Length: 207
Image (cartoon, rainbow, N blue to C red):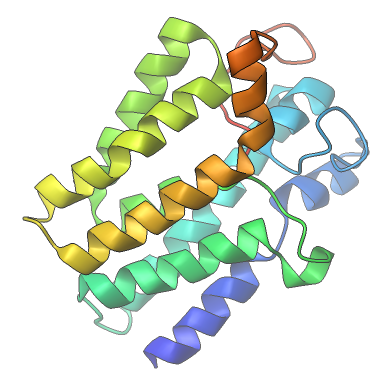
């Protein structure tokens, strides 16, 4: 059953909330405007707060639902299997089979996975993200700081569960890889501040 859940998690992760939301709301395809990234921040900048909020929630649920399904429907409590199922959903978001394997950057989906696997570690990630976004007002920087700290949170709060921490490290490395352009912009001082089409601040990330 765990193997089937991994496949289903990947397929669910492959559904792009950003693309579907923008299409239903009559907004530009996020792959054709701004950063060309199908994530909440790009939707925020070109579609507004409502579309971005739907995108953020949908992307997080893609990571959360498969893990909760494994835990509470099929009784899987082993951290190793849970993080593998979460990673499958995460990889679906990054490399979606339905969109030519070109997806988002993974932060919101990772949050969903983290909350499902270990609620308190996931909450620590969110708290870090919120504090950093409020302080620096740069979405990608907040996400990267929270991502860098996530293996520490999971290691400490899971009492040193090795495979779980390794899985989180794997996800963190991919998030940094997908944020390569953001890192270059941060180093050159060109990264955009957090703001929507209406100019209102938000704390979503290009996920």
